[in-house]
Length: 614
Ligand code: GCU
Image (cartoon, rainbow, N blue to C red; front, side):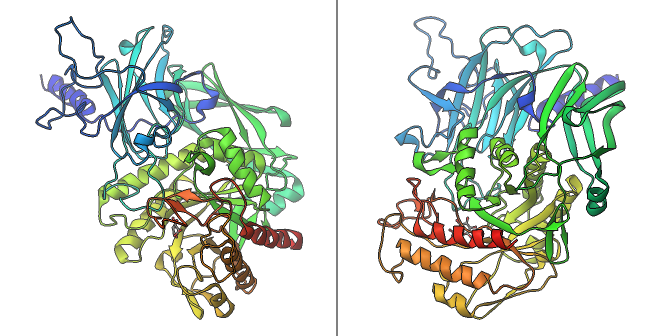
């Protein structure tokens, strides 16, 4: 009797807690999958009528007025007040704001619906729904049953579809998407970017064997002496494989065909850790972005990935890549295609943005202020562009709340797990411009510790805020004690003073660590030409960059790079000058039409100088 009661409680707990996140499945491009991208039906539901009764009580699962249930009129007398039909449709992936003028400013709930067919699953096979990202809160239903919910607009998640729920034809998939902002969320209510809503990245139906490789990591062992390894041309590689559930006995076969490497690793339980040596390895770097095809074989499923091998570290005041000092010639980027005023999501979008960065002679991008789509980091791997990836712990987060800290940690883990095999990613950032206070510093330190526990092979940082003036600027934010590099945002000459104040500015850092300027920049309306003393003109922005570059040339010896703000103009509801801004942050070096501004050339030349000096 007791046992029965306990198991009843256990099942109920699981059922009740449908927000419990399922472990992320990585490298979905390499799995058996059906794309669910395309045109979905929608219901725009600002009052959340599909979710709550008129008494604002959550609807019961079988409530036929719930928008997760297929609306079927019994007869012509029947009263039905919702439905999914043309022309109420939207494209997935994509934000909703750019797809209809009525949704440009919309923040609220939209219900997405489509049917899908799926062949009968073979014995032991399992089906999962995978979302690249949904901004912000998603509730996912199949055939009227809730699979789960997820918060966080820029990281992937997946839910298993119980086999007994599936039909071979016309499975009814519904996703409730709500992008409303709240003080207790990440990001919180105030940001300087557009709160694009929707199913913004790919959706896939994955078919998996009963037991499969859920996550894996493979990289040069961070503890090895890279100089010795290069001399002897023998490199230690280490990594791990996590299965979705434990096995008594099994084998994982890891192969790198190009190197003639293949090894069988016996596995028991759910985790395998391994290390092995490789000879004659071509190391990955921006100048030679060498990627190797890696194959992981387990239980009849073969995963293929393209992975490069490199070591990133700091040594005192220097950043070292593969043991050599490297200067980060960076640029900050938002996940947006300005010409189409929309969120970026595809390989073509990534290519456009990273090609612009290459044209700037940049060797690094700061993906701001949230994890960008996986196409971006995979493209950076291939194009040889170093990446700073960040979670949107931005400005005035509620640092006193454990619940908020948990949300930040979840997003951090999802970011790291998805991209831990992306060679180009060298820096994990735990936040941006968070106001200094003991509560904030301990909040951020917990995130730094979490990041290190998840991945000790990369640098951990955060964009710190610093006061700036034409005199001595001291960088001593207490958080700098815990990060690997000290990164600061400064806008001397835009938010404070004028560009020529840079001539007398001095910079002091309280830490013996590499110094990186994660932001600097000035606004200019593309095509507005005047004299340099006219704000918003291209000449003013050009002047700003000239003065900044001259100042950067006088930096202390730990100066290791910068990622100015920003590659291209981007949408922001905080920018409302009727002539010069019109809802755009105009600090781009490229305008909203994709045209380069004069300042683009100033930074490009500076980077060419640095590159040729190295
Ligand atoms: C801030 C912030 C950015 C913002 C920029 C600006 O430093 O990090 O998100 O867009 O400055 O003011 O333009």
